[in-house]
Length: 362
Image 1 (cartoon, rainbow, N blue to C red):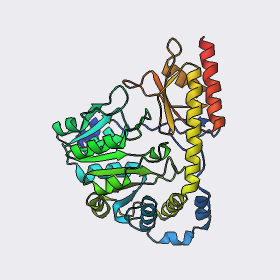
Image 2 (tube, rainbow, N blue to C red):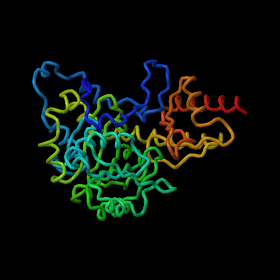
Image 3 (spheres, rainbow, N blue to C red):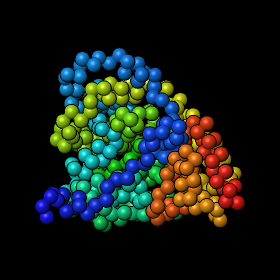
Image 4 (cartoon, rainbow, N blue to C red):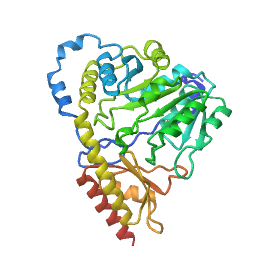
């Protein structure tokens, strides 16, 4: 048909649906797992000192200064790091670089809803391997992915939307058993309370592991759209030299990202505050009848009390009161709400609104 130039797989697919971004600044946003605290003061200083005259030139093609700063932080080489336009660009690069159209991609499901979208864009086949009752990967996850001939597998750790954390030993078992490329999406790893949880050196030494990191959550820079990957040179090199967009990261974002990752003391301070509020919010939600899964992310997944309003009704009621959270109308999630950890004041407003809604129903 004239005027319809989409590829058949694009025409048939569904696009990604982002969380709502309201223009009303009075709305409490606890729906997209943003950091409630501003980025490091060094970011503000770097922005103020940035020489706008340099914008006439192209930026560093591979964001070398940032990669060197990240390498120092992680104790690896810059060649083992790729900088990308948010973690999402890294996901797209993985599929573009390592998955042929028609090949299979495994996902520990439910998970990030962008995985099936990007797989469909690449015209790959998605194999969803259901998480167990504890919201952890099936003990035969790697074997099942191998049996299906999957080229790439995605695992979110800590998992979203549940917040559960997969042990390092299990991740290593999956990686050594799986025949393809294992992508461990660590978008929320900064909020893990166990300081010994660190797969960085395992990733650079393994032949088939790629870690996804982002500055959106832990560093308060969701608006900057800056992420990076960590892995061995054989995985990183083709993405940097072949499939990455030319000059994929602008000069301003490179400077600000390097400033943010260098100030670990400030970032860690915000993580500690968020983790304290995560426990406080979880405990309070339990007192008003919610079941709350133990979370290692900057969010919690709460099951609504039985016999009261449904999760969707609570979601809509909170929205009407100026508090945004996330409701997923999907299997296993229809009676649950995902709530981003906000400031103490934001969390209190959430609880107050929830109590009001539940009392009206009662």
